[in-house]
Length: 166
Image (cartoon, rainbow, N blue to C red; front, side, top):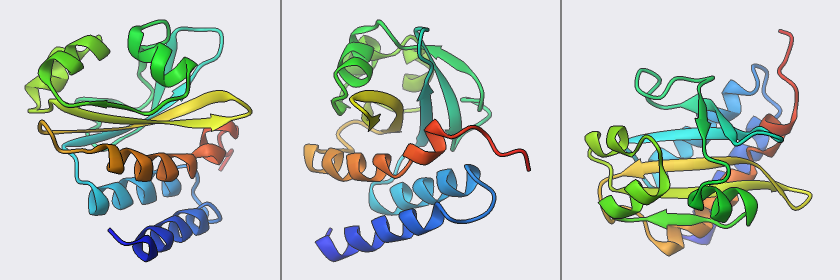
């Protein structure tokens, strides 16, 4: 993927932040960009909940299996120490990686997903959320993670702003 394409995608995502219907418009724009660039079986956008060990699912490409609003206990886990606490991207490319990372690993694996790429959304040295893509084993690379991290960061306003009253 060329730098020009990535620049165009980032410009589109940043412009979508101004659209009415937030945060859903931005979430859908990120989902579309990730589908075009990386592909996935399912994508979730998680918001960290300070003072708890939970994250809240804010968006899901597969809401029947991964409902919006659901809480997931990820803080304090080994994965949480890497992604939430340290603010680092994480790439798992095996069944063992998924089992290590997620309390709902059996559901993830049942969907044919042994690859998971996670990019934190950071603000003021804190993780405010996580973009997570799941697919077949070896679907993602370290190079993909760098691009996912840029895309994830465009989610910041949706993860720190209170919901709209519209």
